[in-house]
Length: 312
Image 1 (cartoon, rainbow, N blue to C red):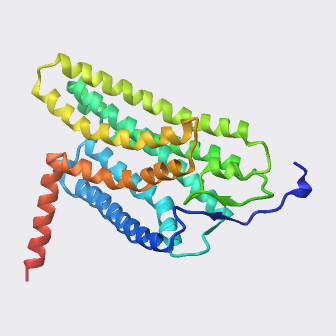
Image 2: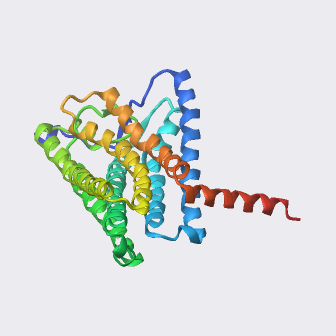
């Protein structure tokens, strides 16, 4: 398009979830409570794993990193969404919009790779139990976590390079509660079809690759346990149920948002909300209620807090 018809866009308008004032007040209360629970719940998991010597193992080291990532994932878009429930003018600056796109994809891609690392940890524990301590050393776990962050950063940078070069000259309303690249691309003054395919392919490379690796890991685990009569293998398998639940909760919405050929704004809003709020909210519940060691550490922490308060 002719550069003379283009203008510099300084802000976008977020249409949000609902236009009813009463509904927005209710949503403000609900999501504020969920956000506080997400932050406190995941923080408690991180603190428990750091302070309890019984939880100083590769599996819990990775779980602490997952909780840390979940705190950031919910913080990319949720505070802005909660504040907008009480605002009539729901705008976001161009810089703020670009930041949301970058950090949302940075943290989401990092979490995808981290879930693969956690599946690999369970694979080694069940399929290579005698070599588990040597393979999943602290150095190896640290390197795998750093790799997850590096892949997330590179993935986010590929989106950042695209969005900062987009020309805008017309509508600036985004039919969502946050900035996501496909929605911003639709506002650009160019034929967005090819660019949509490229960005979805970029997301697909990360998402599909991680999902396939997860399927391979859990398939190997199931085949090993099926052929084994060891109680240890079956006990290790029980820890995988929590991992599988988290994988389904996280990857399901992502696949529908970026791969479903029939997009729906209302469905996309719900699925994006699911990944931003409900998944980080459910992760602490899944990992604490279905894990004996975490429940024991939680009880120990509660007893210590009660004893501290009663002490003169």
